[in-house]
Length: 525
Figure 1 (tube, one colour):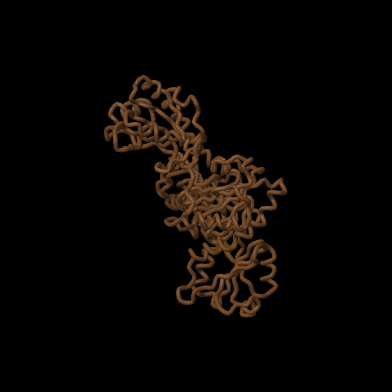
Figure 2 (cartoon, rainbow, N blue to C red; figure 1 turned 60 degrees about the horizontal axis):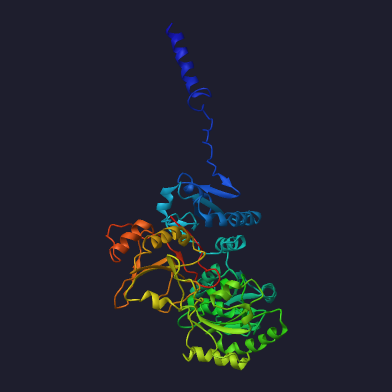
């Protein structure tokens, strides 16, 4: 009996550790848990707090977009982001694109300090603590190229004349770094700049025969181009080394034509060239008499390279926004306008003489020498400007109304395209209706895109300013909730509100240029 019991116990023990039991039998491998798969949509990894770590381990170079389902800018970016993912997949590139639903993943938005949508961050080698902020293009090829230059070399290594010639002949603008020692820290500076200068192709070499071929005896960065003078050299300072800021400015300046035609393709480069002074020639390219002026305009340009950017604007093309910015009509062409992009001050020739190389040069020197006064835009004053509850102001009547010492004047500076301005329009009309019988109160509005005020630069929309009655030209900026109740309290208290009032609502930024700003749009959380 004891023997039978012993046999049963032995069988039970073997069964518990065999295939039917809780562990593998002798010599059998343990089963691995199923590998977690990161979900994808249109070739883009969909990340959350649960799988971000896995994504960083699996992908050495990873670009992550933090988006919100309701964000208009995110929706505009989505198709380009998907196309970029497809481009990289077709090349079997190591870089991957991913996205995070910010409102749904608040832990991640807090971890990575996301305050606006879309925000894109680049992760390299699984480093979770120091991602690089993405500030590159928002179209597919630009996104893909930005990643290519981080996943692989940002410049092509050149060993012989055939390789150098093929690189130079293949693009309009090619930059080659000639360095005697490729381990020098100047090379690292050069490659870092090449990562972000996506509109140029870069190469580098240490080959003495290439130095000789291109007439060089010391370290030099050479820009080759298929226009203007064909080549520009930037010698590396032997004592100070290669300064990335100086080189960047050199490349931006010399990669542009002496005369650039304004269009949607060239405008980002025009505004990023860091040349503050722009001279614009407005012409109708369909007219032969206008086209004949281009030669003289170009002849005047070389002495001003790096100081004044010469730009041609075709009034017959889709450039109405540029004309509006300068207060011009197409029929006023041909004409010149000069603008300083930092101060936004605009200048016009004093008289309408012939446009020649001599007159263009003289106008530039006169503006740079402070001999020409800037002009300010103003719409024509409508005859019924004061007939509605909300009074209409323009540049020409602003001073007279705003600084009337017998009136308390509350002015909305707006842009016709501004969403925030449209949202508060009803409250502003209601405010004007409420106080229309108060003789000492004026509610007014001014289109700040069509009227310029030298003493009151407007940088965001809407901007609300209160001009209280009395001497002294006092001005109070309103930065509180934009609703009828709060507006009324503000007026009733003479331009003051208790400290506990809500904080300022967001304002739409003033466009830096007549075209789109180079700063990419985001929506605040």
